Length: 390
Image 1: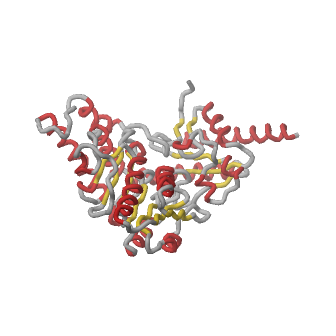
Image 2: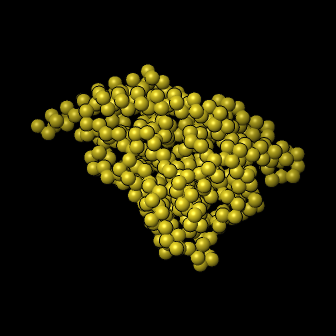
Image 3: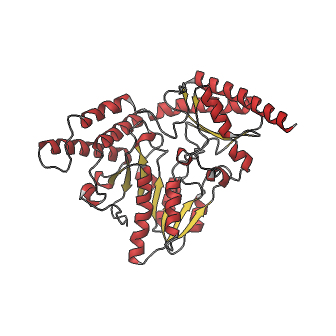
């Protein structure tokens, strides 16, 4: 198996930070008690769980009881979308959902699932830079609209959405507001009051925490029908013994990310600019996808004419460089990226796109090496394609 020397797929997942592993280890070994047990071992584990919940609440500027732990961002999105929808269905009020055409499939597929049961969904399209305009959301609101779900930052082309403005519009109309903030965790401000959101999804493994754990912030009195039946865990909101070690790791990971956020963001922005400028300046027929500035600090999504993205990925892999052509959750799908298609890109541009997402392990030398390899690979592949055509 080829080794990876340069990892440029931090939007897919991030390595577990050493300090996070250290925080988790006691809860994987000695402190193994069930947090619902009343004896000492259980109480000790419960104390750790409560501390983690409090730390996460501090990062989100919310109350600890407004946090519900999940298995990750997908479960959190499903719970938010379906939970609000079914609550309104049972009460016979509100049947309309607004979301965007560029959401993660955890949101899109949840909305499409609900359409099978008679719910009406409006999919707002982005502008050419990948931004969902607040005015477009406002125009889509109807008297029966009961939920708006717009992602905080796009997982493919990194566009940061005007969530605070959209959230304010939702509040003015009395509509519940959810945001999938999975890609924003550890990078953008997560203050739920400043963002005017009622529901927010996060996943730990996007900010150097463990896989298989996430959370859904649920503002008090938000109308929601809880989906998972069983025990009384999470204040009867989500049955099942909590993933204590994972939750401890998530809280520590977000704490570390928040503490170094500004400095790390500036470092990543400089690397992002170096990577974009290098590719646009040295490789002909390239196009940056998404807004040039209103994007995640680490995200570069770029299309190359007359080259297949999948072929480029294989070439990069042979040089020890890991990247992707889009969401890791759709790898293996034969369908073109719904995100880039929504921007109006031609199929050839969509198929010739790469997502390069930077992280803590990357530096200028790695960025320069990646530019060199891509330039060489694209020139060679284009020559081969031209020779075949002749």
